[in-house]
Each structure stands twice: as C-alpha cells, then as structure tokens.
Length: 340
Image (tube, rainbow, N blue to C red):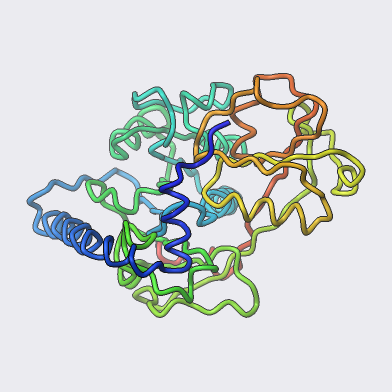
C-alpha cells in the first residue's frame, strides 16, 4: 500500500521544525504564492472576477491550514445541533478524491469514489441533504432544486472558493499549530496568510486542551471557541451494533490504517488506549484502499473516513474507531445570533 511521497514527508517535517536550507529554497516560492492569492482576492473584491449568491444563507466551515484540522467532525456536530433546533440544513462540498466529476446529490448508499469520502461520511453522520461539485454554487443550486425546503447551507470547506458569497465564515484551526510560526505554501502549511483569520466571524480551535494557547490573530469580533475530539467505542465495519472497548485488542495482533490528514494522531490515540500496533499503515489523504493488501490474520483498526470506502466489502477483521467533536453551547448561540 503506497505511503505519502517522500517529498511530502520532507515538507511536513520542515513545517514542524524548519530546515534552514529548505527555507532558503521555499521562502521565495511562498512569497510568489502569497502574491498570487492576494491578487486573486483583490480581483474578487473589485468584482473583476464574478461572485455569486444562493437564495438561502451560506455558512462556510473551512480552514487555512492544509490537512488534518479536525474540520469534518466539527461540521457534523454543528449540522446536527442546527437540525435539532429545527433548522433545515443542507451541505455542499467539493468532494475531494472522487472519480465522478459531475455535480450530484449524495446518495448514502453510493460508493465513496462517486461522492468523496468526507461528503459520504457527513451523510452517514447527519442525514441531511448533501450535494457535491467542483463549483459550490452549482452544488448549492442543485441541492436547493431537489430540496427547496432547505433554510441554510453549510459549505464544508470552500473558504478559498470566492466565487461563492457567504454570510458567515468559520475557520477551524488545529491546536497543535497555534504557537507555530506559520508560513504559506510551500514553506509552510497555510493556504492563506495567518492574518486571514481576522476576516472570519468565528475561529474554532480543534482538539484543544485546557492549556491551549490561542493564535496571535483573532477573528474580527474576537469570537474564538475550543473544540475537543472524543473517541467512542470501536464497532465492526459490517455491523455497527457490534461494539467493543480497547481491551478487546490488547491480546490480539492489531494493525492500524489511516488515509487522513494527520494519521499519527490516530495512531497515538490507539497507543494511549494500550493497543500495541504491529503495523501503522499510512495512506495519502482520500486515497482508495486496496483490500487485497489487507492481512486476514490480524485485527485492523481504521478511521470512519476510511470506513466509508469499505462498507461494500465483507471484512470481519476490520474495526472502526469513531470520533465526535464536542463544542460549547455558546458557539451555537453565536451562530444563531449571526444568522439573525
């Protein structure tokens, strides 16, 4: 099973602990990237590039940090809470990694290669209508055409998709990067300058601890909230009613597989539960899983994001570790206040 390219590993290592010679090479490229991003935003601000609106309010939940920010469980938690408040919510997404390039409504029974793994996971966890497409506007229009009762659209990612206007911007930022001196790509892991946070309505620090330090830049109204990520009981891939605790794996040969932004966080969580992993298999984010390469004589633990790619297969030795985001009630009150 292929791992991430060595060049990406080198970049990730550089982002965490800068390598002086790589900084000399990448710093000019980052300044060029930052200039291009700035010019593009300026063109949208002057209406030289067209920006479109949808007929219902749009809330962007996005990030400026590449990969592994914890955005998907946060999106699911916010959507479920708004649904409990009797708000009819729909989700739109790019659907990264999917092979079907059409704009379409997500069917929860379809394959992840058609929908994308994150939209399919959100469909399973929220049950709300979801549309995917390269153009978020086209996805939103299709969703409203099929579900005209929709009152609010949540855009999962798309912060940099400036061809779509938005009513609220929520930026999710990983706690482990709050104290880092971060640069834009490729010298750093940011899609936009850190000052972009100051233009958002809300900042959510994901996987925060009590001693988490907030970033130097705050959103425009100073609204910042912490989110914690909580692991739930393991369940069997083909039977979610069959649940076990970590002790189940203590006496078994167990490996873990993860095709997510920060797989090491997943492996570390398993080891903290006392699970001795004989193998840690890393896949590129959104990558397909070759089931022929999976061993049959060991227990295999995977993420929910990877599980949606395997639901059509009978794999009795595969177990899933679900994760949920816990957010403060004050965040939901702030979102409802902004919507008014």
